[in-house]
Length: 266
Image 1 (cartoon, one colour):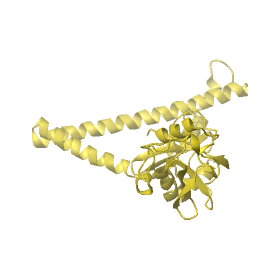
Image 2 (image 1 turned 90 degrees about the vertical axis):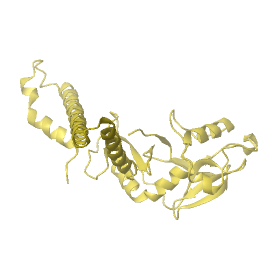
Image 3 (image 1 turned 180 degrees about the vertical axis):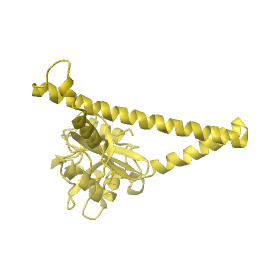
Image 4 (image 1 turned 120 degrees about the horizontal axis):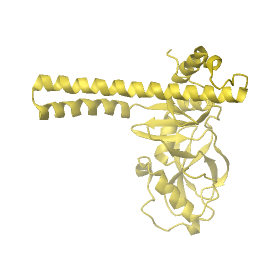
């Protein structure tokens, strides 16, 4: 299996032996060497990504030229190019996959051979939707809201099951719950996943759990309930049982696990 970029960078760093020719004569300082080593690895990865992007640009330029030479018509060549590129992007978009996200901000497709150090979280791409999953759940001690009497009697955000499983707007739903009053300790930028997101996590649970454990996190519970931010009524919200994938309408004042999520922009 192809080694990850991080592994290749670390290997190249070991071969460079730059410390022996360092103009600052710091080779005996472990802290400085560690900082330099990390900087080399990050530079290597950025350079690799730049090279790959330039390669893709060159391939697209060749495609544009080839289409023009065939048609001898700029408008027809543009339409053909947009059609081909659109199809390729659709293939990538619809590919369900799991990514590892690192402290420095870069992400890699999870293969089981990735660099283990400095993994921050795990990302999911499912049917064109993407989001980040926390490495650890919040404990099963929180109600969705403190008091359902503080919730609106009616709201356009309240949805039946058939609509809830297609609703991905976690930001709007989480904001609505926070405004009603909740004790769930979300960090800035975090949200409670919607029913659609929980369904995606359930569908990808095997691969997702492998990635979570690989990253040093905790796998999703396969015999318990997770809160979604998808509300059904003033007093009820949708909760998903990871033992069977069943979605249930549950009292908002009951307790359930919460898997905090954040945005994931590929």
